Length: 320
Image (cartoon, rainbow, N blue to C red; front, top):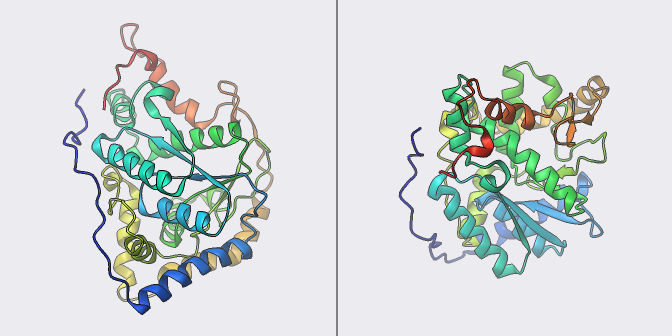
């Protein structure tokens, strides 16, 4: 099996010096106020919550961690290391640096410790067996599984995600294209839960555009790498992201319009799909809508060899 092409590590991320203008100062203040307004409008957090922020070392999660800490919310951070070569290695060093600077506890969850292999190796191993899952699918399912499990173990009452307005617009459209209205019913600035084993997920950057997050991040000189995950370019989301960015040039505000229409109809979606019951995965005891959760279904494709001579997931060597 081939190793990940990301084999050459990069130098530490050093932010470029920034000289603030009066407009920059006004923008940063308004950015933070809008985050607080979103929190209050949708009742996302309160000071009595035990708040766990899911961080990747990228601009969005670093920005939301910084703002919540600045606003006085008691936060801890959690990161999942998928071992995508030097990309995640550098991001991990970056978020460690940020958390140390603002004195926030960081919990780390390595893929190799949890699953015995890196994301790229699991994906390639599945592909060799005829299961052509994209990196984003494998990563999303396993990462979500680990974050909810860790948040519950830590006693968190809220799990904060760094999803911005662009992210939400993309997911809404992706679900529409794939005719998955039940998945859209779960979206929004705050999850509607029907099981106490699922930790409530909230999105304080829900109404903040990605370009605004980039500007704020650069003004604050966060040590982050800009751009997308190198594995995301093979995914459906990448095509939808390009679709939005292309139409934004001739139809400014298209992302806001999509999210606004969704919010206006979210109640109807939730009412229609509210009957979906949450049970317990027979294999890992985590919440699931079926007898097995998606993470276990995915991992079983690796754990169950097609031939007696083939390796199981537990036997996989630790590789990038």
